[in-house]
Image (cartoon, rainbow over all chains, first blue to last red; front, top):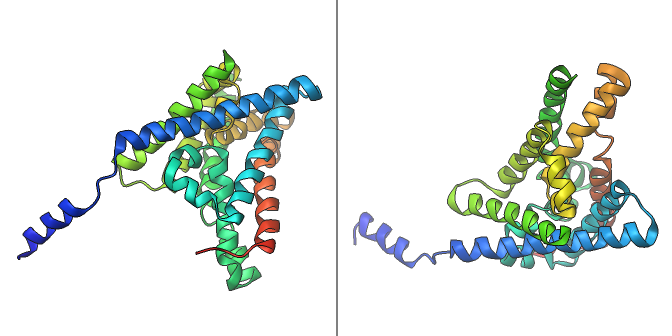
Amino acid sequence: MNKDEYQKLVKQLTPKENRVRNAFVAFLGGGLIGFLGQVIITILMQNFGLSMVEASSWLCLILIAFASISTALGFFDEWVTRVKAGLIIPTTGFAHSITSAALDYKRDGFITGLGANFFKLAGSVILYGIISAFFFSLLGVIIYG
Amino acid sequence: MIFLFAFLVSGVVCMIGQLILDYTKLTPGHVTSLFTVLGVVLSFLKIYEKFVSFAGAGATVIISNFGHLLYQAGIEGFHANGILGLFSGLLAKSSVAIVGAVIFSFVLAMMFQPRD
């Protein structure tokens, strides 16, 4: 068997991920988080008299707590392999990346392990968020006044 | 109706994210960063606030909302205190997400061991 044949065989035997199914599952998973989030926001606003902003902030904390706890207990990775982007794109993915980095690098020590790697995955979201928001804010103030 | 739109908006955004992951070589780190910056741009174009008003949590649960909050806080900071306000206020609204994730992650990392 030469190299080309081998490559062909590898390609044939590699399980093909069903992209349509992945997209549909991500749609359902992400949609469910948005729907449940809206249910929580409505309950908070009607029963606790919170404003929309306060209710959204509480929802953000609830999602983060949910993602961090399920990551620490080991469920989250299992769910991500099923729901994929449906759990990564919401705030849950942000919290998951920090919690899993904290858990993974804890054994390398508090400073060089946990401290140095805490924002290893979420850092780029914070970094590019701040950079783009800073310059677009400047632009926005100039354009809109 | 807002419940349906909440489902549809966050669902479609997650689906787009999944399609990017499947059809390109970008990693989840790329996609979340990209969506955050996209949130800033949509907020700048005054589109994101419309998403929030008709889809509610559908727009606020996704990571793009982080960019939206950064931009809104930057603008408010500038109007309150000029260029210094832009520096001091940029993180004002997204502090909840960052501090929340830091506190929960640290406390839980102290309590649990990683599973491999």
